[in-house]
Every structure is written in structure tokens, then in C-alpha cells.
Length: 303
Picture 1 (tube, rainbow, N blue to C red):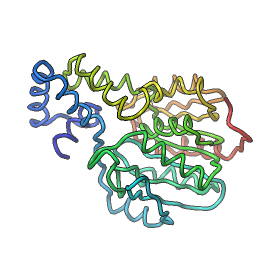
Picture 2: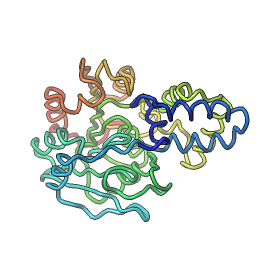
Picture 3: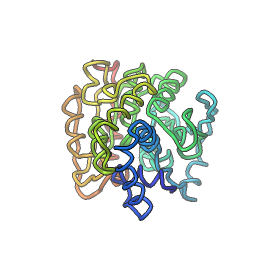
Picture 4: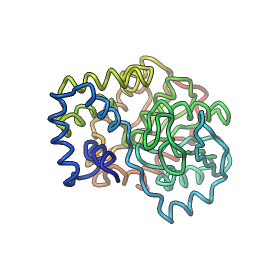
């Protein structure tokens, strides 16, 4: 990772700081007082810079078993993949991840008789750069691609997502994606809570954070509240959801899964222990529960 990616990952709790991060953090602390507007621009860049997970030979081999789909978003070529036949399940990876890292989920869904479509979000995996530039990404793009896939290939039996991909998928539901069921692995309930953790990790001033949130709201074209998964059922039709969250997750809070399941009508919560943030994606019992859950057709989304 470059220093920008390291800072973003460390602030998100997914990597430990090295000497470069400590130096930049000290510089940021000083810059908050001396140049708050310029610092807010840097903070915005950090926030929207995902760590780009390496595609291992094993993941590459799995992705190569898929039927490649031709997909673009604006000027960006999007790597999209399809497996299996049957009712549609859309699968959305998390922030800084790629479709291949959800292999166990994809194989369980195809084994349950579904056709799976997944993609690498712009700025992730094999896809091209985000509309915001190299190494950048945002939930707006991810949601827009999901909505487009749902319109072209749907209706969807299920939307299945992990971590930040749950946030993007919930935004897609708010913007017109129709799915009969949702499965959320380790969801992030409200990004503003994680922005506060980001602020503490980088020792940023309140003024800089307010400027950053105002800038990002203008750039996204919607308020951060639109990304609140707990509040979503008050604003859009939401399908019944299965929520899976590990109690030992240190990247997204286990309490987030509890809150999402409690707020979405007709939903079920599974809590695991000792699996961590990504281990839930490979847990046999959770995958069996997912397969059983999505196999049950629902005539319409529940609001």
C-alpha cells in the first residue's frame, strides 16, 4: 500500500500504523490548525481511498470460472461475473475487497440453485478507476451498478453483501433495486459512527471533520443519512433480511448487526463467535442458513 492507503486502512482499523503513518498523522494534527480547508480535502481523499486487496492466484482461478459480463459505468470498465442458473442473486463485496473473496458465498448460492452475478466495484479488483479518479471509490457508484444489474438481469431473488457492500446495497434498495430477500454479512449500520473512529485515529479536529462531511455530501449528491441502514425501512421498501455478524468482529461492530436486524421487518439475526470480520463468509452453518433463507421465495418486498 502507499501511504494514503495505509492511513485509510489504519483509520478503519484494518491495518497497523507504520512509521510513515505516524509521521503523516503528526503532520495532519498540525495542519488541522494551520490549514483546515486544505486538510479537509486530504481527509476526503483518505476516506474514499480503499485498500486494494490483492487478487491471489487462487482467487484469479476462481474468477476465471465465471461467465464474464460486459459492463460499464460511465467511462469505467467494470469486471463483472456470472455463475450458475436459476433465480438471480446479486453479490456485493466489501470496501477494499473484490468479488473473488466471496467465493464461499457464491458457491453456496449456486449450489442452492441460483444464478449469481457479482462485480468488482470501480477502484477495486479487476475493474477500472472510479469516476473520482485513481485509487478512489464511493458507495454511490457501487449502488448505481447494482440498480443497473437488477434492471437488466432481475428481478433478484436476493441481494447478498459483506461489510461496506451492505451499505452500498442498502443504498441501491433505496434507489430502486428490487430484491425478495437480503443477506447482510457484518453490516455497517451507520457510516457516521465510523467517521468518528476515523477522526480519533487520525487526531482530526471537529472543524476539519465538519468541512470534510460537507464536501463529501456535495460530491456524493446526498446526505450521509441516506447511508444509514437502520433508518432505511422508514424510507424505502425493504426485503426480509438475514443478518450474520461475529461477536469478535473488530472492523464493523457486532452491535451494528443487532441494530440492523431489529430495524428491518421480518428479519433474522445470527451471531457467531471467534470468526472475525471475514470468517463469517466461510462459516458452514451461516452459509447453510443463507442458502435456506434465499431459497424461500417472497412475492414482493416488504415495506
